[in-house]
Image 1 (tube, helix red, strand yellow):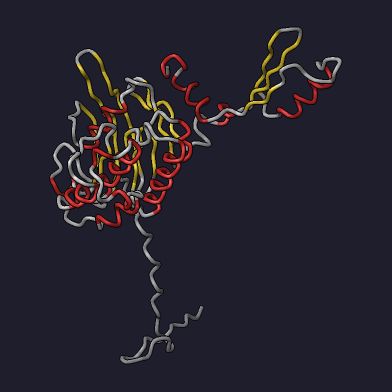
Image 2: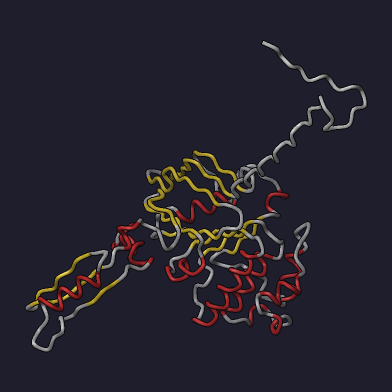
Length: 318
């Protein structure tokens, strides 16, 4: 058998000439995924005999709005205060913006914004003075006038804080929370006391912040608000996460199965079915009265509130 060998290239041979091996272009390395803004594992906190937080796991990705829902006493506030660095924990791992809030310094704190449920503002300052004063605490704040405009308070820039309405004060709270240009914003019951129009305006502001790259952790009892704003919903009960998902998928497919109800001879009947129209047609043929109508026939598709109440229990929610 004859073996043919390719002659070795002579020094100075151009690439691609006989005997020259052109190395393959290396494939581009895949871009690493951005780490989560919030990473919580087995978080625990006890008050005496009460375990307020009993092993919570939570991830929040950059640019997400995550709504944390749960009845009073579920552990929401304690969890958020630990993430903000305002409360210690008894156990578990917590990383927020890559650092442990329990030991993080001023540079870390300048990267978060907090809009608490109860504001403690300087009532004698004007709106503009309040925002400018807060901006000076941050190394690279947003332009205070632009922030005032973003929360639609330009017309009130010269007004004393004490003269503002409840909705206007809440918008000022948000301005103070975002003027430092935070990477992560905590919102606690942000639209409490808002009228419907002010609430809608506020929602658009929050969505605009998200579109600008701010990650937002929202705690609220308003299920409509959570459905409108949140990319993902986390339900907490008894110090544990009991469900997580988008507002459309929370609770799984079975939780979204339509409910058909009707009355026959004064007795209420109900049935969950993935084919509610077919069931309604069957009832029209078999259970309709002399007028051709099925008494009290109703098809209900479960809302986020229905799913939430199923997860936490109506009694706990009340």
